[in-house]
Amino acid sequence: MLTAVVGINWGDEGKGRMVDLLSKQYDVVCRYQGGNNAGHTVVTNDGKFILNLLPSGILHKGTVNVMGGGMVIDLEHLVGEIAAFRQRGIYISPDNLKISDKAFICFPYHVTQDILEEERLGDKKFGSTRRGIAPAYGDKYMKKGIRMGDLRNLAAVKQSLSDIVEWKNVTTKGYGDFHTNADIIMKWLDTFGSELIPYITDVTNYLSDSVKEGRDILLEAQLGALRDIDYGIYPYTTSSQTLAAYAPIGAGIPGVSLGNVLGVMKAYSSCVGEGPFTAEMSDLDASALREAGEEFGAATGRPRRVGGFDVVASRYGVAMQGADELALTKLDILSYFDEIPVCVAYEIDGHRTDRFPSGDELVRAKPVYEYFEGFKVDISGCRKAEDLPEPALRYIRYIEKAVDCPIKYVSVGPKRDDYFVL
Ligand code: GDP
Image 1: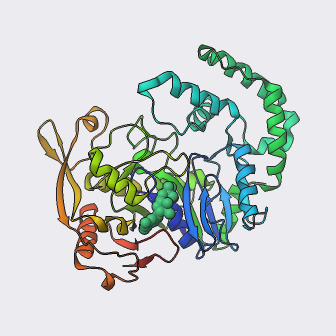
Image 2 (image 1 turned 90 degrees about the vertical axis):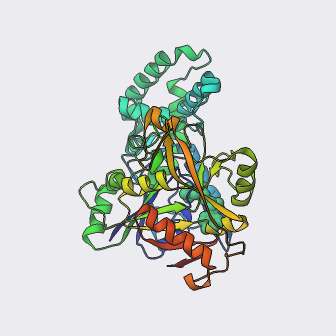
Image 3 (image 1 turned 30 degrees about the vertical axis):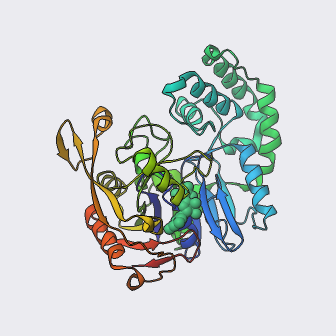
């Protein structure tokens, strides 16, 4: 079975938590896009783990974890992440971690470029995580970079790297401070790359064989549908394809069809960074929800913008992901509301719509809010639908119908067991 676990919203839906939960049923877990701008949080009996680059199956010893060719990898960050996880007793070796030879390398100069560009933009900044992700993907499509497989023979890439660095210095002249040097980059590649060579694998072969042998594979996304570079809230998107349709491509098995798409959807809305966010709450209401939901970025610590559940955006997210079923997360957070706010439609230039717009229309959209009866009790101990108070169950059933997709899992807390199957 080939399953994709993807985000329905703007990211931070709790994908890491769901992937960790499901990993024990899968032989292989593969991250298929993004870089260390991710911050998937998993809470086990050993505490809280934040995964930036490592797939969220790494906490299960029997699961093989794959970093797909659609990822961009900061070598230094990955070496540090592996060391930190090992220090906490997590088993990581070439047996259970395989890195695609086709994944693209995110260099220190990508990070510098990202920071300098955000600073240049000032008030008009995008809200980048400043980890070099957009410049790295940009260079990938400019065909100005090197891939993980190249680390196996650095001598062979010396000349092309020198040409790339020369180009980088030409194209970034306007930043003034920016200057990089091929020798420094070669040394960085050698220092951190040599530690990663044992993990580099022809992942296409590995995954194709796994499919043939009938092994179960879970493909893990970073961010959500609304951050997809093509179908999200461009240009306030990420720089890669977050959608399930891309998952087999980013993983390394483009010809294999998905058997199941599980969309992870939050019981309210949150959004990190800039850009249109129609359901956004006013300051006072937002700070109460932000505190209740601990909505601060896992990768950066930035406060997230928050709002009520957005039916219009979520229905679009479900459709773009082609979700077969959903996991509804963070329902427990809503228990403090007397009345639960839900953005049921948008109003654009005086006209009500339930179609998710793009571009300037999205910027002009205003939320139409309705209020649902609150449940006002702690539901984090609920382990079956019958344990839920009636208004909570009604809220779930309303959402299910509104986004036109069945909810299979309901998550009521961050720990592994804080969930039930509906
Ligand atoms: P991801 O990037 O999609 O994996 O999501 P993040 O890890 O950035 O954000 C989700 C946060 O919510 C993490 O801190 C999780 O531990 C936490 N979380 C996930 N599901 C639940 C839930 O059902 N209830 C509560 N209270 N927290 C949750």
